[in-house]
Length: 207
Ligand SMILES: Nc1ncnc2c1ncn2[C@@H]1O[C@H](COP(=O)(O)OP(=O)(O)OP(=O)(O)O)[C@@H](O)[C@H]1O
Ligand SMILES: Nc1ccn([C@@H]2O[C@H](COP(=O)(O)O)[C@@H](O)[C@H]2O)c(=O)n1
Image 1 (cartoon, rainbow, N blue to C red):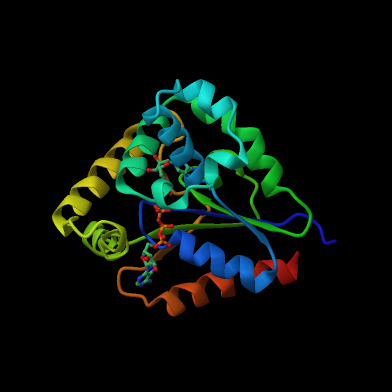
Image 2: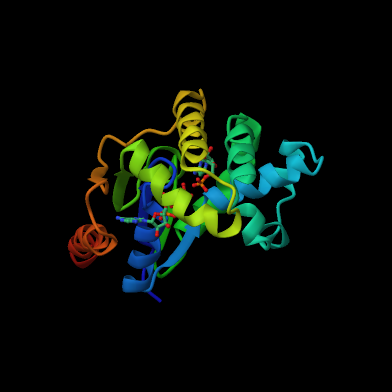
């Protein structure tokens, strides 16, 4: 099994970081963690009446099972509310760091991977797109499970979440100083993935 190699991919909601992360992981045989899913799971537990810090401390794989609910708009908003709490974030740090340094390589995507969770990551990317483009992409996804959803509602949700994630005191959404920025607003999925794969390839070979 090869040495640890961490790819940290951050960016705002629906910028395409998960799509890029999964493709990079598949290409290099790395493990992938969507860290947003952890916060979504804590958010859903909160909606169901559990105190969020207790939920984060007791999180198990079973909490990640209901993908349909976790991927919904209500879970997204709840996630960004619990993500403001320093004790919730602290409860999730060790799990993410251990995953990042596993043998064989790991890709983690989220908001604070390159800045807080893995500041020593071998590759750091910051994936962006305009709010309108991101809302359109998320709308196309969400309308499959909720035909009543509108693009304006999704844009409003994205903007609220962007503001909450960027303005919080602990681990705000920021590009690490040494992150490579990829604006996917006018890139196809294949083009965005190709840029990321090339960057990882250069550093993975050198390492
Ligand atoms: N470059 C692209 N061009 C067009 N659609 C894209 C592009 N990148 C991603 N998408 C689509 O946009 C949607 C959101 O992408 P993705 O889930 O990768 O974003 P994300 O940043 O991981 O979102 P989240 O904030 O939920 O973690 C998906 O439906 C995906 O297929
Ligand atoms: N490293 C992270 C990942 C996510 N969050 C918060 O969770 C929300 C949902 O994340 P998605 O990636 O699934 O959109 C997000 O809005 C953040 O509030 C986080 O704080 N840190």
